[in-house]
Amino acid sequence: MMDYYILQNLVMYLIPFFCVLVPILLGQRYGLYLKTKAVKVSDAPVGSVVGASLGLLAFMLAFTFQIVDNRYNERKKLLLDEVTTIRTTYLRAGLIPEPYKSNTRKLLIEYTDLRASIVDDITPQKIAYLKSRSQVILDTLWRYSEALGAIDRSSEAYSLYMSSTNDLNEIYNHRVTYTFEYRIPFAILCILGIITFFSMFILGYQFGISGKKNNIVAVLISVIFASLMWLILALDRPEKGFIRLNQKPIITLYKQLHEK
Image (tube, rainbow, N blue to C red):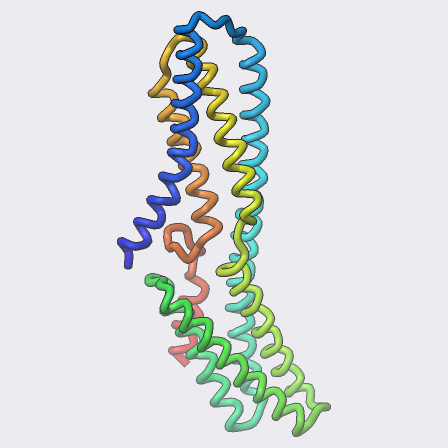
């Protein structure tokens, strides 16, 4: 499975790499072709176009990175919120009668175990099981809230418990959405690809009309761009396993609940 993720990340790196290298080489070859044909081309306007296109590309990269950075920070916040809510619900379960008290705490321990189990081994099968089993646990906790509400709607202790289970459901939905469903819009990736291709083609064209090949520079630019794009895509797809949140809070909670 690790080999599968390595292959995925390699593809995420190589596609941007060749999306930069190929147009630079094509533009360079076209510029050299015009140079050999003695076609007079002024370098000044080409340089202005290159500067403008690279500036626009830098803006798009910054815009795209801001999207994934905001989502990464939101996922970090939701992780801490979920840990806090699990612990709060566990404590508030002590305010309700049996068998709801014991059953709630058992389910919350299992709920925490599910999260701790994928810290070091994220696979599509584990993710699917995590989502389905978590939903069953949350539905069960909510049924407990409904039962307690039917017993006494005026009880403050019951209200605290119901509030915690509601918060747990809300945070779960947000975490699933931000972690596994929200992605960089495909339209943004397409526009970024188009701007990248033509910006690099013009850059290569400028190399060509100067009469000198710059293959080493082309490779270095490709490496730089591919590294940045890999970082953006890896932040956008945390389930790939190479850039993940620090899971220490959930591990700490896991240990605390099993010590009780």
